[in-house]
Length: 383
Image (cartoon, rainbow, N blue to C red; front, side):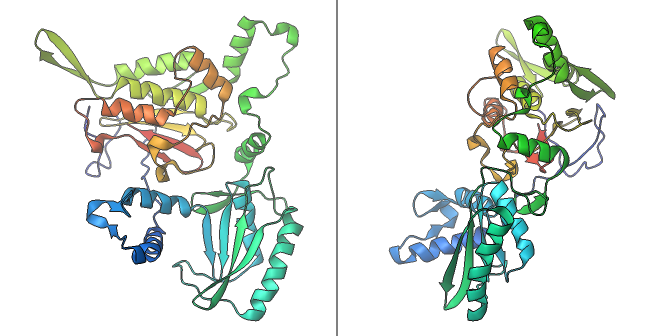
């Protein structure tokens, strides 16, 4: 396998030029120190202290696990020094995502500033009423005290139905709140009904739904454009899979070595990982974005697959433990078709299979590991 791209060559042109983009893999770690301190506070009396140079905490938790927890916590916790009605947008965003907690009276550094008694009493009455009036739901709004300072905790549960505030839909993704519009809103509403894009009914007459015509129409309706070799190809998903894999093989190098009486091939990239990455691009992309297409960029030292649509659950893949990301299907029918054709396994996460394929290579090094990244609108996989 080839050495991956590094900062020494930021302007290096791709061997097959389609669209040269660089995306940094950023990780939210803004609450790590707080979580660590809380852990020490809880266990200091028991003689259980973090062993930083030994990687374990309390005997069974690693620094990496604590970092992952802190990154995940940053997605579901927000601190505000005082209440403003605009924070109803955050509550809407939490309810439309996975739920979360909003603290009033605490700053971003986790310092409890405290709230005046008369303000606390008013907020404990006003906030629940405003939430109910805006969304028709209730949240747990409780008074908390630390070091004799009072603050308010608002627990927001995930809503079963899409919520809006004055006609605007908000969603908590990563550590930010954003308004969802356009194709994202359409996909969000479809998902909330328990239906996927590839399950939606069409206006094709029932008498024309023979297997052959259904297959052709179905593939045509879910066509994917791939910009390859300064050209754009459009076709059915299976056709695109075959032609794209052939293209990648033709445009990547494969070395070899003599081993006793046989020749051992040494490809730039594990073929199984590339196949899994391409299949994931075909079956997990959002088909609701008009004019968007999946993209494969082949550089001298890396391959980047760019796909419309972020993680299906709105999470940021770069904040997750890649080996333990649960499999969630945006297009379950497409996944089933590819599974029946043995182009993908019908169980388990494709991320894990990609990592396994890399680690099985005899020349594998940690720095060669694929990079998974999403910005909420697109998904990027860099080999």
